Length: 476
Image 1: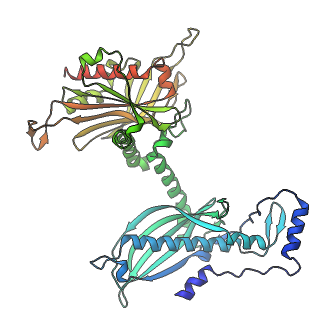
Image 2: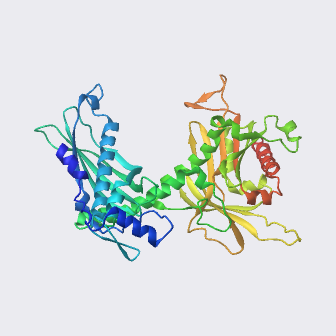
Image 3: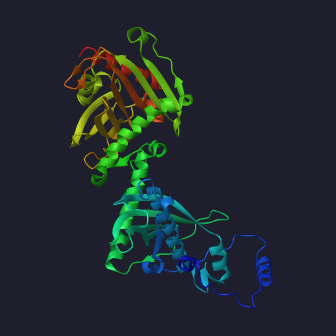
């Protein structure tokens, strides 16, 4: 095993030609250019998948298992990550292991190869689709099989398959997963180009082609759950991160991301209290009508001049009744003063639909009237732990293309969270708590455009809309 591990890192590095001494090379380089530049990175050759694939074998010791004798899942993942790094290193060495390299049209000696490999740093950037199919026990022989599936610039996707076998027993497939490894220079953290891969067998060609889909899926998933990226809001640019592109393959991820992003804004109230500012209620007379009305503003959660505004209050109405009222888009004009039209464009499933909001046009400084603006929104709703959640955010969907009559605007997740207020007197009907009081949280992402529409005072606009909504709901 030790000889096998040493062979993974060994390489037949060609020796320097005796005529090229370090001093001569250094002198020649110094005389040709007075500017000290980092050594050029040689261009790698294409590598087949078989050149870097390998099997790593480990024995499960008592220290690798729990009190039941089952191998720790973290230990399995550690072995997989170790194998993925070795596989990626073999791939780098195979691609750069040539006597002479061509860099920018000039020949570079093999010293560039030596310098490069001495300075290589491999970093694991993500672990994906880690599936535990079965268990292993103390005494099992664990075999980690690794293969480079495809390169993406300075990174490579490594596919892994883990098998377990007790001496004399059958081979069991216990784990699979994909690990992405990035190649950098340790001294400068400069990215190093990964050698291209050449698939040969039908199975290798299948893994090679599917790697692109996995990479796209991972990228979209990261954007779905990355709050900072999701907050980027630009006008007339539906391809920005503030506007998701609908995908039937990722419908569940998109729906969950829509809800999760809204809940993230609420969760930061308790976690990062210092970033929230209490805003004065304007006009103050609203407090006489709704004493529990409160408004807070977060200036540091999103960045890019994008702020989160949350209006909350206790409402004398059931959460279910308020949910039904808010879900009726035709009634939104009753409490949204700048909304001109709202309609459901397409129903996607029982918890998602595409809606369009058309807002009144602004009046310019010279008195000219500008175009109306519209939003193409994905609306996701559901009931979670007795709370009703309605979240809407910009979406790029073929059923609602851009219209030249409107300015297409974008917004990050905004919506409503309706939580029943419970006490010891709250009745229970058919194992469900029924309360006639609801804690309303109205979450709005305030962008520069919203400020412009609100005449520079979005707080007054949003608080006024919330007060009207509360008034209508209390009459239900």
